Image 1: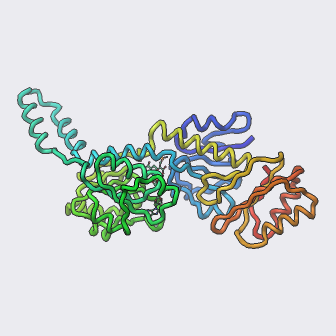
Image 2 (image 1 turned 30 degrees about the vertical axis):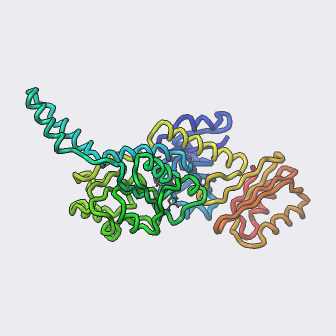
Image 3 (image 1 turned 45 degrees about the horizontal axis):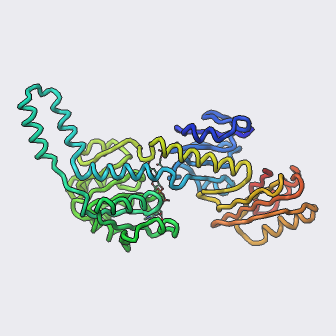
Length: 389
Ligand SMILES: NC(=O)C1=CN([C@@H]2O[C@H](COP(=O)(O)OP(=O)(O)OC[C@H]3O[C@@H](n4cnc5c(N)ncnc54)[C@H](O)[C@@H]3O)[C@@H](O)[C@H]2O)C=CC1
Ligand SMILES: O=C(O)C(=O)COP(=O)(O)O
């Protein structure tokens, strides 16, 4: 029986992938083989030694101490693109909230709730109409920072709204570039995008290079009166710097799904709870993808969509499979294969991949690996985390 510990609200459609005969799934299970979670922060809690893998049903993995887990052989997965459409749709809503005074005018109308005089109400409604007029998105420029799964969808859709679109992504993958319309123009650097955009939307992960990157310097390079949308991570924006820029009018609105005490008080800020990925569809996509990846890893040792291990999978050629991770240095694979040969164990198929400092190997062998064999392999220098699956 394998055990999965869950955190947060994980959609049932994904949980049902763990067959009840073979898996125990619960938020309180002891000694879990794997964890499936959303935004719950794992940084401050000890991870049970039994854990082999952590799957983030979502995109951002800044709630998981990935660097700490990697040398322990713990594979961390995410579900790339599975919630991108949900975020895209909320960004479109945010663009409209930023252009048409919708929330402000709704508050104004709600404030008229006690107005019983029909003529007076009509007069006040007309007054509100004058006060909350907006401007159209068509013809304005949208700057998209980060052109991955979410950014690319938004860039393409904004073109259809008649906007000019500029993108900035120094680490753009070839796969992501294929998703992008050729009408999206490329900014050479962040400041060039900020200086030309009426609306700026952030879609980068929270990593050291991006933490606080929207700061006083970036904001002073930004076009006067620009509006910033942040449905990526609160940490990307230096809070006191953006509040100062809102106070002077340099930035005319900040729209985000990361509320804080100071931001809630500001009248040029529009906030939602962390709602970007909270749609039925996105929650199901993420939980299904995360659960499938965990099952394939726990049962076959295959790794798809990991953020710290290489992508590696092999169809099973026999019932007996060994997997191991090792430091990515020469001679380890040779030593392991020599050991298997010396023990007269026939290798039927094998695949080996590396990523940064880590290598990972799947070996299908003709006979059932014994505990002794697993121990001997684990003792090979630089090898860690040997499993018989
Ligand atoms: N509010 C919410 O509910 C949600 C928030 N997110 C956040 O959005 C982020 C992006 O999500 P996806 O598009 O799915 O991820 P992704 O990995 O597909 O795209 C991220 C892009 O950012 C680029 N990038 C990295 N560093 C950069 C830098 N310094 N400057 C410019 N670009 C840079 C990467 O090259 C990549 O193309 C996630 O990491 C997460 O923090 C994601 C989903 C839901
Ligand atoms: O996928 C992400 O990065 C998100 O921020 C979504 O977070 P959630 O799963 O809704 O807690």
